Image 1 (cartoon, rainbow, N blue to C red):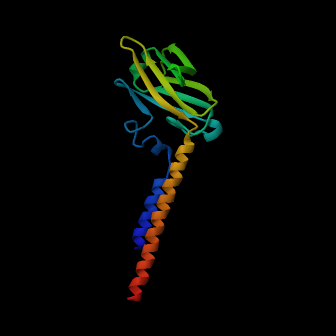
Image 2: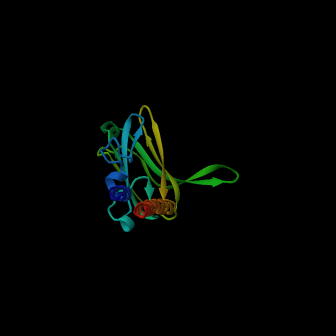
Image 3: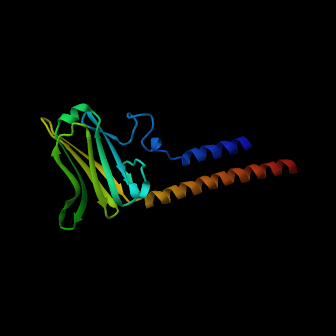
Length: 187
């Protein structure tokens, strides 16, 4: 029973491990969760919040508001010859009708021969935003992705609930193994 308890503890510990490689899917660009497809092409997205998370590379879920560096890397070389426009917008829903989109930061249409587009911004409030990438050329393409900022409090509650549930299961396993051992000795 000690082996079962030990394997449960090791498995639970592995669930709590959080590395940058795991956050990006691990295993290279094919499984990286921050790599997205725009048509047949690939783009890698990274975000950095140096004031709150140092040099940690983040993806589409940013833990805090504040100063943020957003980096869009055009993986496929063919994209570097196309004009690209990038903007981050906040949707403002109106009671009267369609939503308005408030641009937070934008980079005008231009070519990026080195393949890297960097935007510096300051998210002043928590919320859901949208990253919009428009590839110009003969066949224009538009890519939109949700960007969550400062909403990790919701995830923290989920993590605490997961940890508490895991601890409860481990406690029950331990209690049952101790109880079963005492009943066997009493017989």
